[in-house]
Amino acid sequence: MLSDDVNEKLQSIACEKDLPDAIIVTNVPIEVFSVDEQKANFSDLFTQIESDCRFDFLRSFRRVRITFEKPESATAAKLLTQHLSFNGTILKSFFAQKIRLRDASDDGLLKLPPLEKQFLISPPASPPVGWEQSHEMAPVVYEGDEDKPKVVIHPANEEGNIMPNQSMMPKTPRPPSTPRSVRKEYT
Image (cartoon, rainbow, N blue to C red; front, side):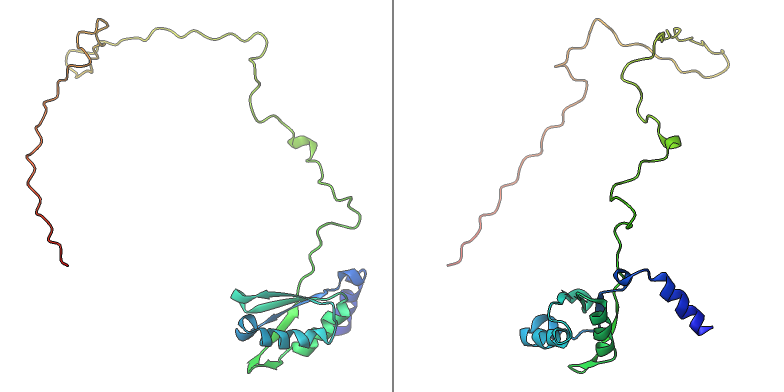
């Protein structure tokens, strides 16, 4: 049963490009991020495995991502750092998931949307042929019943009896201001 799982995983890996070539080391001591000597000591652990590895120090997460040229180097580095004590802190490491941006069979271009989803979103710039604007009827005024309350609206005068400079609001005078006290200057 265990060998069946291993065989399935081996068959799912098509080529060496599918294997992870980076590891993420967690629980990294904070001194690695701030002291250059500690950073160099930490980097030397991995440059012994492969000299052309790249380090991404993620201080706020207390993690370091190390990218190698070959997946074998990443595996060796993971085995080296798994449960390693560095400056009194036990390091933990795991493989970084490989991100495939596109399929090998894909030409790298976006695919067109399906044909059933193609429709206009905005209305046309001009009205369709034969369209005419409808004319609305004048409003119907219902006078109401004598025994029920009603709302009466009186239109404004078109002659403009009230001048703009005339105001119906009373003006309130401003209260008298009180004199301010003089500040004493201390020298």
